[in-house]
Image 1 (cartoon, rainbow, N blue to C red):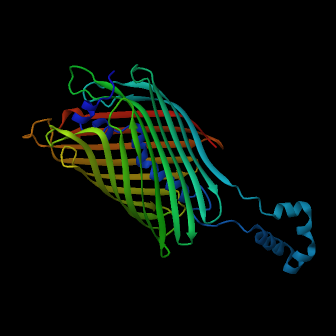
Image 2: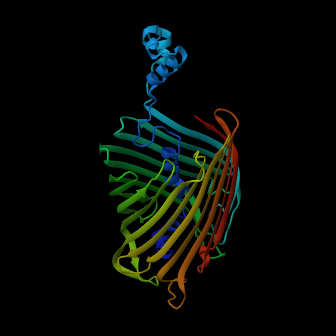
Length: 435
């Protein structure tokens, strides 16, 4: 096992960190969908900024009127003053917190655990997973929620990659100053501990451990534009820290988001984002890979995302998610890290009685502007990479809290650089408990 080094990440364009994404990073592809699902697809009521509290007193009076035949008799009957009946008719104290959480335990099998092009290794594994969403019901002008995802896999057949952990956490607070204007504050923490194989030939294995901590804060002003439109303008920043590596960097970003929500389950929008990555120690390189003395890398990435959440049925039990994102990355003059990338993904989430299913398909295409496919060989074609991934999950709720699940994932990576040609497949079967 070898630790991550600057030379490794620099000569391979940070292949491990930017392209061979950890499990939790790929999980984030569905994170935005999950959050909006919980907030807007009926898991929690009321939804954002809406007051849908049932007027129990009015309902009780209506029922008694129907029973007694005269609304005046309701007041004169004395029934509401009866302690027991009054207790039934009075609205229950509103809950301050809503929690949706699940625990999973299972076993599975994974092919090519280390994402290797030359030394694939397979293994059985055990799985433990926590997924929790907590939202505080405050006034109609405030909202606070927390999301936590944690996962650990223990591989039985690979000693150097015995355990793999990942954690995603977000806290989000929204304050409405007026019915149309609000301020959103959020913080994120991401952690991953995972092993990879970055071998460049079949001769020897080059395995290393990646431990990454990512902490960021952001804020945005939210403005309603008419009945169904909303606009967000904001930005943020944070630190990305990699153990045993000099590739730590500071990130800053600015974003604008426009969204159209014609009805409860439907959302369509676009997000523009500009992100800066400021490295203190990563060496700058020319397009073919030559080092540039006394210069470090600063990366700028512009992205535009079009997304949609579309209800297929009126009951909100079947939803379609679509996402198309284009990226344009530029370094500060070297050219080695410049690329154009686009990513398309399609997801389907449905419920029927005790069954729940998820399906997600994505495709990513990356074309480097000037960097050759072979290091230090300018006459070779420009480096190109593409990835196809499919993730599917099915749950069956066999009691009030217990459910069985099966999940599967397949990923195929292709490139004109042989070290980036590999496939990964995994399948998991287990039980879960939902609060």
